[in-house]
Length: 333
Ligand SMILES: Nc1ncnc2c1ncn2[C@@H]1O[C@H](COP(=O)(O)OP(=O)(O)OP(=O)(O)O)[C@@H](O)[C@H]1O
Ligand SMILES: [Mg+2]
Image (tube, rainbow, N blue to C red):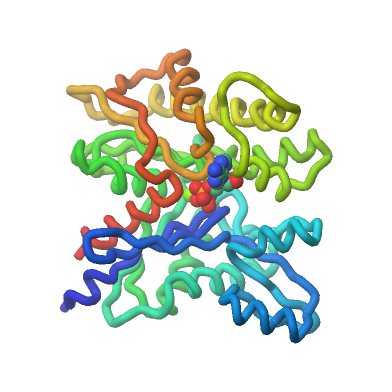
């Protein structure tokens, strides 16, 4: 039996390459908790450990090092002129990071906490890359194991579909949801809440950071910090940094539009649509000012075969997928 408590405390968890976001219902609102999905090792001292504990910064002591994870890892890495280490790459567990499972467990546990009896949790998983039979099984099964281990009744939702659930109630969940994240851009077209077509492309924020960093001889972590603070798209390049980042932004948008075109052209079993459908953009990489306009311009220049009623930004691009995962967890009860 599901009690009112477990119902109101259902959890949506967006497990992203870049950030993990937990969404919970709080009265009529949704409350979000966010941590960077990254970590960094700093030299151990008793003093540092005390300060981190006092400040409530998630960390673990390992021998003569302290592993700081979550939001503060980026700043520490920058101060120490290092890259952060990452539990995920391109949407799934990072096979080049030996501690990926242990650390993603630490970060998800700090955000989700232990479950109450019968508490539901729905987490996001990426779609396979367009045209590739990718193996997402290991990633999904490992997260399921970690989250069931906390006592939750666990289910998963495709990331693009989560955008549709979070944003398109007004069209009864018909439309295209896109999340431009750190590791991937995820796309899902849903018809009356049924996912008809979904895919991902492996170009997103990390690709932009790494490519721009290599052109500029910088660290990717530094590019990322500057990009989030000051980058916008307006067609003019005021300085070298904006010009370089702009080039890779265009590359990402162009690849996304090309993939959309070929996926929809090749999509079989497409329902005959009686009216134009909306397209919603979300994800951290959709945040810079001018992104929506640039995307629309490039899409309109392509021969996209579906008639769109609007192209709009999600209400909050950084939390749209977590909200959709919460909607899925609640609707299941
Ligand atoms: N204000 C901003 N301007 C530009 N980029 C931003 C901004 N805020 C976040 N980003 C970028 O968004 C990306 C993270 O987005 P998001 O949190 O949606 O990804 P994710 O869900 O963790 O990853 P994925 O879905 O690909 O697995 C990072 O590359 C980050 O640098
Ligand atoms: Mg994401």
